[in-house]
Length: 124
Image (cartoon, rainbow, N blue to C red; front, side, top):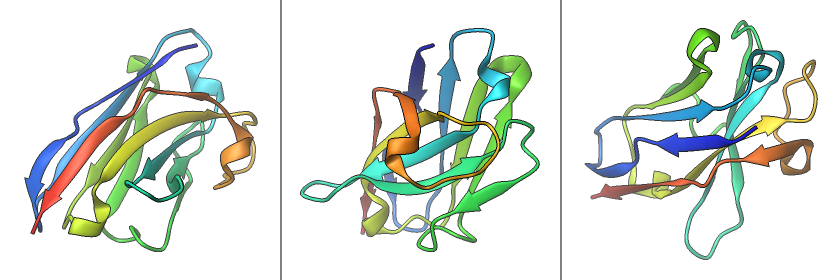
């Protein structure tokens, strides 16, 4: 399985972006998918996760109410809609596939396949 993230760019504070993560392989729909981000000089942190069906989601407190994770299993794609962006949201965003399929998790080590990252820059 390979993951390809896209959709990053430069946006003003208060603006919106939608990130996409396209997956290769037939088993995409079986897995929990997540988004993480890493700002310069900081450790990578969890952003959001979604179950295989899309029926349950989990967000970091810092993005709750502003970001929405969703997926289209027919297109093998997971999305991250980011609204009301703040300068502190600027980072490289990574999509990842979880090892398991049952329990949403924010633990980085429970994700085994990672995309290459897409850069989000937020100007103030």
